[in-house]
Amino acid sequence: MTIHAALFYFFAAILVFAALRVITARNPVHSALWLVLAFFTAAAHWLMLGAEFLAIVLVLVYVGAVMVLFLFVIMMLDVNFENLRRGFRSYLPVGITVGILVLVEMALVLVSSYLKPGVAAAGAPVAADNTRALGRLLYTDYVYPFEIAAVILLVAIVAAITLTHRRRKETKHQNPGEQVRVHARDRLRVVAMPSEKRER
Amino acid sequence: MMDSTASPIVQLLGPAWPVVWTLLKIVAIALPLIIGVAYLTLAERKIIGAMQVRIGPNRVGPFGLLQPFADVFKLIFKEIVVPSGANRYLFFVAPMLALGPALAAWAVIPFSGTMVLADIHAGLLYVLAMTSIGVYGIILAGWASNSKYAFLGCLRSAAQIVSYEIAMGFALVGVLMCASSLNLSDIVRGQEGGAAYWYVWPLFPLFVVYLISGIAETNRHPFDVAEGESEIVAGFHVEYSGVAFAVFFLAEYMNMILIAALVATMFLGGWLSPWPLLNHVGIPGLGIRPFGDGLPWLLGKMALVLLIFLWIRATFPRYRYDQIMRLGWKVFIPITLVWIVFVATMMQTRWAYLFH
Image (tube, rainbow over all chains, first blue to last red; front, side):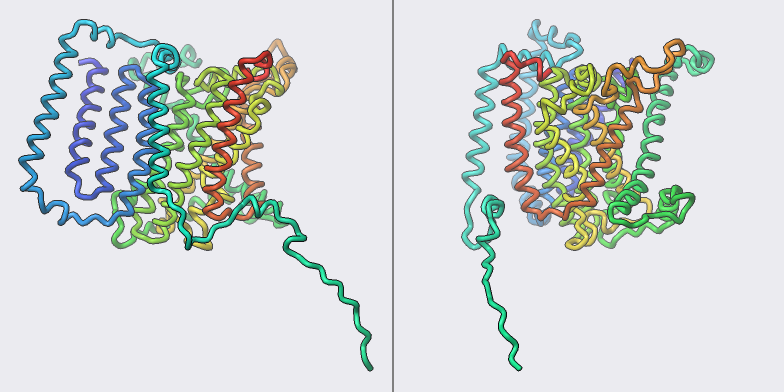
């Protein structure tokens, strides 16, 4: 067994264990942290495949931003575990059916890609600077799908903001522009008062 | 570099030599860094003291030079108190999670033309990823402490870091457009030719945004609402004492030095000297060029950026939280977006040489 294979099994074991702990951990914050570990090990796998751009972006986007916001929300929730676990037995058959279906679908996809002869070439060693290669591909051959995906994301952002944003009347807020533009004469009135003679 | 001179050792260790050699290089980066942190704390107190017409620490050793060691020994011998109801495991893991990324990001910083631990292609992205992971230490410290003040501090800090990271990322986009590379060594080499070629000039708005976002990202004054003393005692590390607190302190100052190194590398020409003729000053026969390109210039530029950080801390009052958010989202992000589009447009005109 080469060092490469040993590393693969090492990371794979961590990845599977972390993924299992995500769904079995009792505390949701612990679940989120196990998910962070799972993302990290997946990034390590990609790094071993030579996909350094994808690996670093996985850490940057999912570990550095998405999971931070997840933790942010989960920490503030007061989750009652007894209530969550109550319906476990009644939902079990449905859950198992869905799980098996997902497993079969994934297996079908993987098997078909194994049987296809052209896919083996994709596993060939990629160019060393794959950030440049990926960028060139995204902005030449795949520029329209890429731009459409970007526009869909933009629409999603705008939609999310319009759905949740509301101007509340009772909160007080300032207008920084007005604060900057203010002059002394708007705030201060100098009143001339002649001094009076002291009476003896 | 030293492979030929150390050949008996190389033969003795055999296949383990690359691992040992890398570990030695890591120690050669981490050890000076920790000493640098120690003396940065002293410099901070001395410089702010001077700005406020005080003397600063001067009791321990000559000119107070042993003060950092006194502080460290004091912290080491203090008891570590675990709050009741705290999540014990995460409580101790949190400081390590803060320190780890702060150290790991140094792997790709080029100290000179040949001195870099990992010269990877996506170095800039790696730095961005590592600095964004550092927030976990703060969040978990606040959550695991089982304390209101710590929790409020960590929420403030998390929201602030995530917001300013966007502006920082956009500032880096400008740098990579100019250098047309993500490799930090290539970015430095792209600025060759003297101070007039540094990226600080074509990217001046991005430079200012990056510098200020860097201060916000490290939770330094005037953005230190995460540990605002008058509001939430000491923020996320209020329950920490002894060595656990010292590790947080170490991580914060290490991040400061890292931001300074990044500013120097990306905008101020890194290890290049500001005047190329200085490369020819010295004794050519012996190869001694005291003012040539190399590590001293990088250290000097880092010291300058750190001085600006301390200066800002001594000068400005603390921001209010909504003002911090406004500055990040409504001022910095639009500035960076506009400047990126401006740079991209100018690169298509005949003034493109100004931006490379």
